[in-house]
Length: 118
Length: 113
Image (tube, rainbow over all chains, first blue to last red; front, side, top):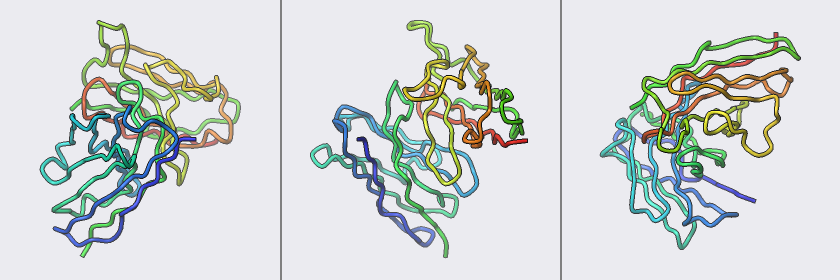
C-alpha cells in the first residue's frame, strides 16, 4: 500500500523558515518524480515544486522560486521542502504527491499545515 | 504558465441527474507527437486530499466508477458525472501537465439540489 506522510508544518513568523518532510512507503521511491502541492485555506491547488526520480531535475512555481528548495533522499524514501523567507501568502496545507503519467498525481499525503503569521 | 479556467464555479444537481463541468486552457495541451491531451481531473471531498479521476483527458484511473467520464481536446475539456450520487459531493479540479509547473483550474463545487 502506497503511503505518503508529511511532517514539519507549524506556525512561523514572516521571514522565518520551515523544513517539510514526506516519508513514503509502498513503492520504489527512486523510480518516481515527486511534487509538493499547496492549498491555501478555502482556496484551490497550486503545484509549488517538483523533482525527478534521480533528483537531477527540479522545477518551482514563480511564487516560491529563490525561497523554496526541494530535495529527496532516495536511500531514506523521503521528500523534503526547505522553505525560507516565508510570507503570509505561503499559509496553506502542503501536500506531498507522487507523480505518474508525466505529471499527474496519483497518490497524495494528508497534508501538513503551514501558518505564517506574527 | 498555462492558465486553466473552469465553469461553472459551482452547480447543484439532483441525485441521479447529470453533472457537467467545463475546463478551458490558455493554450493547447495536445501533444501531436503522441496524440495525447495532457489534462487530468481530480475530486476533492471535504477535509480530504485530491483524488485522481481522469488522465490523458479521458482515461479513468483504476477504481474510478464509470459514471465519471472525460472528453475534449486541445483547449476545451469536459468532466461528466452521468448519474450523480451522494458521495460525489466534492470540488472538482482540472489540471494540465503539458508544461511545468503543472497548473490547476480554480475548482468547481458540486452539490445536491
